Every structure is written in C-alpha cells, then in structure tokens.
Image 1 (tube, rainbow, N blue to C red):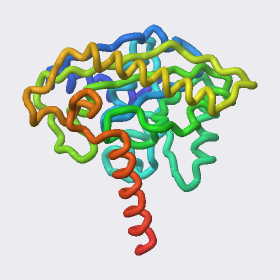
Image 2: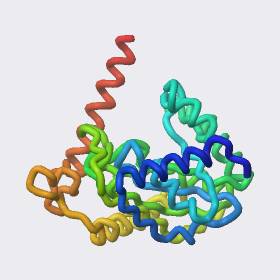
Image 3: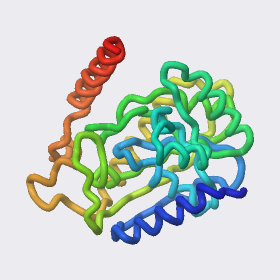
Image 4: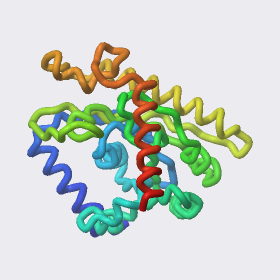
Amino acid sequence: MDEPVYAPVILAAKGAFAGLGLKLDVRGAQNVPRSGGAVLASNHVSYLDFIFAGLGANPSGRYVRFMAKDSIWDNKIAGPLMRGMKHIPVDRSAGAESFRVALDALRRGEIVGIFPEATISRSFEIKDFKVGAVRLAQQAGVPLIPEIVWGTHRLMTKGRERDFSRGKAISVTVGTPIVISADDDVEEVGRHLHEVMRTMLDEAIERYPQQPEGPDDRWWIPARLGGTAPTLAEATRMDRLEALDRAKKRQAD
C-alpha cells in the first residue's frame, strides 16, 4: 500500500529514536497479522504512545490507523500529518461516526489502534476500559490484539515536563490475539482484555532494564511498586476533577 506520508514519518521517527539513543525492545511483533483487519488495543501512559505502539506492527509491514481525539486535527502541524496517515478522529460527543469509520477501515483489512482507557493513566496502571475496542473487533470479525508500552511516559506525559535526554529504554510488547465470536459478551471480553493487559504490564515493568536514579526519580514507578506516582484511586479522582473543570469551562463559553 502506498503511504506517501506514513512511511516518511516512520523513517523520521526512527531517526529521532537513534538521535535520542533510545533503547527499544519490541517483543511479540509476530502476533500482528501480515494481512487482514485487526484491532490493536494499547495501554496509555504518554502523549507519544501512538508512535511507539505503531512500532509493534512495523515488522509485519503494517500501518496502524489510530483513533484519537479530534482536537489534534486542528493543530497546524499535527493535523495534516494525522490526515496523511489516515488516523481516525474521535468526537467524544458524537462517537457513532468515528466508530463507523473505524469499522469500515477494519472491514477493508486495516489495523485500527485504540487506547481503551481513552485518556492517559496518571498512575501508569491500567485504568478502567471503554468497550469500543471489543465491540469493533466483534462487529468487524477481526482479532483483538493486546499491546503494552512502557518507558514512553519518561519522555512526555501528563503533568510532567518533557524529558528527551538520551538513553531511555522503551518497551513495546504485543500479546497473543484474542478471537471474539458473535455470541461473546462484550463486557466479559473487556474484563478478560483488561486482565491480560494488566499481566502484560507487570511483566514489562519486571523486565524493564532501567531503575530510578534516586528518590526524586521515582515518579514514573507505580505506587504499588514503591514509586511516587499517584495510586489508581488518586489518579481516578484527579481525572474526575479535571473533567468537571473542562465541563465548567465549556458552560462558561
């Protein structure tokens, strides 16, 4: 497939990775099919996750069409790139249209990337899932592929200054595809996906080759593992307060 925008963007990204001295570890890439549709469901800890999550499909020669909030398309730089790479804008107040576009892409044999948590996890744990990824895979009749990225939050995440200092490790793990039948319960499959990705995250953290450099550098470690990141409950409360604040601002406008 001709990709006049996506292919050069990948080459540029790989050049940037080399310039930053990133230590990339991509595992399980063979789980991405070389042809046919699939839903790639990734955790979400960084603003850069769609770049690294896409690497999991790269060895199979596949391009991932990520679903992302439509405000990105308004950016003068990112917008044209998102259009050129055929990513799928999501208007959270009118999600049916983006669902239809993603479903059409899957039926054409594309890989669609989704972050089931919808927003970045401040705790760096797996948050509650939306069921859209499961519904898409079921209705399109394609496999659901779990994926975990780790270390990306050390570069650029919510509430922290970006840090592009050299030598950080980045882990990308693609799990075994989950096959969903038309009779499967969406909520039950969603719970299974959540548990699979929690286990994959624990394994990714355990084998991660780098450790905090001191007490002040423990912010990127989950609280349950001795880090200073917010707990999952604390992060949920912060997300709710942020959502309320956004709603008040919209009403004021």
